[in-house]
Amino acid sequence: MLPPIPAWDAMHPIIVHFPIALLLIAPLLIVFGLVFYSQNRAFMISAFVLMLLGTIAAVVAVATGSAAGELAERVANVESVLENHEELAETTRNIFLALTVIFGAIVFVPMILKKDFARKITLPVTLAFLVFLRGRCGGSDERRARGRTARSRIRRKGDGRLAERADGSSDIEKVR
Image (cartoon, rainbow, N blue to C red; front, side, top):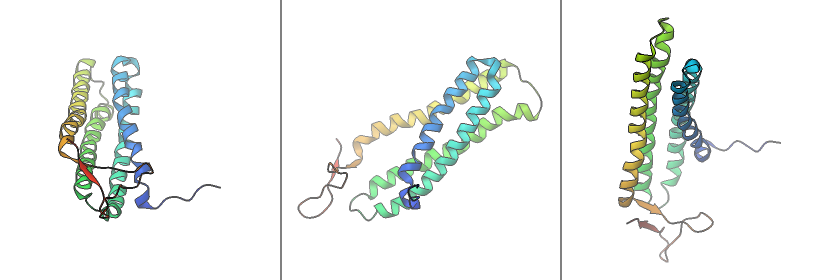
């Protein structure tokens, strides 16, 4: 017998891993499509399908995260951490919505127009897309790492519960 399906607000930790995995693999397929040009169409369509599924999963992850965030707001002193987390999630979702549409146009417009654009056109456009993808999303990791010194983190006990002070408040410490 299968275990019960978790509530919507409890699904966030499960759902959030799908967009991460799918959106990390899609650029690799794009690179494979550029390297193995004879199989370009198959790799590019596969990359688009992964981007589309990853983007849909990102939308669902933001929705489940919003539901889970309402429960987490009951814990003392986590509002700023949750706001930052929510802002980054929404930014990622919005960026990948736009990138998926752009990449879909790169892949499918030549098929719809029934034109086989020369490699001298598709290669630079696809490379520009990859550079934008890396600069927009990869660069945000670097900005996040620099900004982490100003953010709060929650200190937890070994069993995952929030550590509490003697006065009963949750222990939040600044990372320096």
